Figure 1 (cartoon, each protein chain N blue to C red):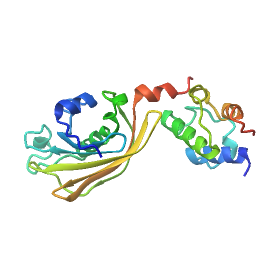
Figure 2: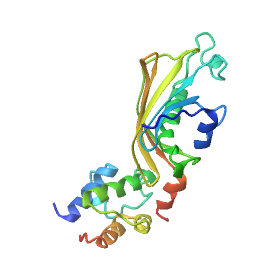
Figure 3: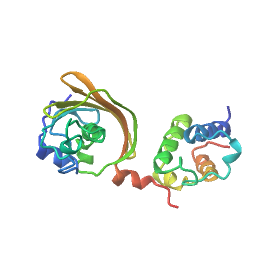
Figure 4: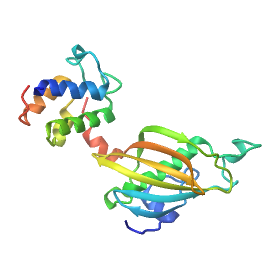
Length: 154
Length: 79
């Protein structure tokens, strides 16, 4: 596995998510076309904590899923031919939420690309807080620039 | 299992169809399951089952159950 650390500038070269929707702070390992490992730090200054919830802040489920998929897409956006491409969700399956993530927590995320063919990427990601399982999910993500070439013309 | 039975089985499993009589009129975007992602899953399954690799033009042209049968003939799969 390539030992490669990507900070925000490098992550932004690979994917098009931007503030306030960029939900990965660092990629600490990536094996392009195979796996990626990264993390997201959560500070109370995140825009969603005061609303979710005012008396008991925790990371909303949709944000957790977005953190996971943004590390997942790095498994193939780290490949030169896909760098900078937009991606779309096609499916999210078997999502599990096992831990209440709070301000001050760091979400460690591990993602695996199972297959990438004709612009459809399939795989999964798992995440942990202090080694405890947090959120996990399976993903099908499309790369429209590639995928759209194969759509039947109707 | 002959080629036609195999073809039918792939499509029925891909799209969750239980009634074989529904296949004849099946076309891309004719049912919710046969959307663009379902289309690529179908192509991948057919390639696996018949051990073929389809050309891009054929993937694009594969717009219905009947058209699919014509296209697979090009790969020596006779139904």
